[in-house]
Each structure stands twice: as C-alpha cells, then as structure tokens.
Amino acid sequence: MKLSYHGHSIIALENNGSKVLVDPFINGNELTDLDADKVEADYIVLTHGHNDHVGDTVDIAKRNNATVIAPVELADYIGSKDIEVAAMNIGGRNEFEFGSVKFVHAFHSSSYTFDDGSGLVYTGMPTGIILEAGDKKIYHAGDTGIFGDMKLLSELNGPFDVFFVPIGDNFTMGIDDAVYATDNLVKPGTAVPVHYNTFPPIRQDPQEFKDKLSTDCQVLTAGDEVRF
Image 1 (cartoon, rainbow, N blue to C red):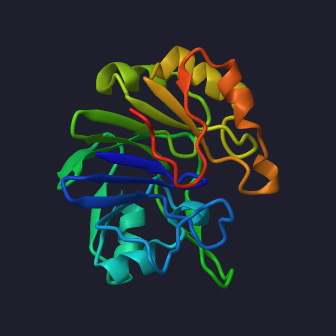
Image 2: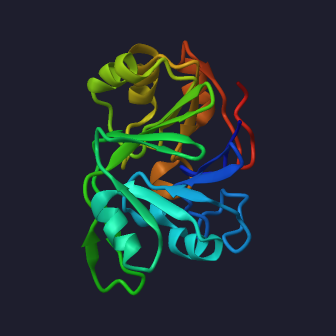
C-alpha cells in the first residue's frame, strides 16, 4: 500500500491496484504537486462540500470514469453531473476494491458554491473518514474543531496508524487543539498536519505542531509518502 500527501487536505492511496484521491482541490492550490488534467483515480473520497475540498472532483472523475464516495447529499449533487457515486452517511462503512471507508463526525459546515457565485447547494453534514487498506488504518479528520468523541472513535475503530489532522486555525482547529486531540484523544502511530498555509487566514508553522507533540509526527510537503 502507498499513502502520500499532496498539499492542503489532499491524500492519495494506492492499494489492490486501485488509486484513491481524498479531497482533490488542485486548481487554485499553490501547495499541490498534482495536475488536475493528468492525475489518475479510480475512486475519489470527499469529506464535505466546500470548494477547497470538492475541488476538481467532477473533471477528474469524468476523465477517469472514477466513482465518487461522499456523504449522501454531496453524492447526489456530484451524481447529477453524470458521475458514478457511492452515497454514504455518518456512521456507515462500506467495502471497495481498495479497502473500506467509514464516515464519522466532524464539526464544521458543508455547502458548495457555484463557480459563477450565483448561489450555494446544501451538501449535508461534514465528515471525517476512516480508511482501512491492507493492515493499515487511517483517520482523516476532514475540516473540524476538536471534539471529545475523537477518543471514542479511536477506541472503537483504532488504533490508527496515521492521523491526518487540520492545524490551520480560523476555519478548523489550530495547533494547540490539534496537539491535544492527537496526544490525548486519537493517539495514532503518527500524525500528519494538513489544512494549513494554503490561504492567508490559515498560515501556521507545522514545525511548532511537531515540536509540541508527544506523538510521532511527519511534516510532509506535496508529493511526500507517509512512512509506515
């Protein structure tokens, strides 16, 4: 299995011959190494409907004939673009060729803004995702503030090999809350900070996050693989 980080909240997973992208916000993301016109995907998993997470999903899915796995309201919207979808919801788990996906709580918001700015479409509840592939368990928290049930999620679904945790503050938890969530609630094998430095309001120093942690941490740049 191969797991890599690609800027903002994008991760890529390859397992059992399938390629998976999570939250492929590529165009408009100066921190990514990916090209939306060339990236390959068999599956795309979305945590919520904000444009910096849905990103280039529609174009990538159409070009690759990929299946989009998303919370049901967001899946309905993506499906209206003649794309194959797998609609799920919080608490639900499903098996796919690459492994399994389970959607879990995140405390945030979720709507998609039309490209012309003409309005919004409601895209359901925001989520985190638990990915299981091979013998590895991965928790991508999505966009969220800290919440106590992260500990329950870890107890019921963990232990997690990797925890992708937002540190950008302003729209999600910041460094201190992310440190507490990692060390005291999730307790993963390793933590990878995400959702920072893409825009001015979320400028943060990931080294500060790493220095404050008791847990192992990998600060990655776009294209780096997670080291298991």
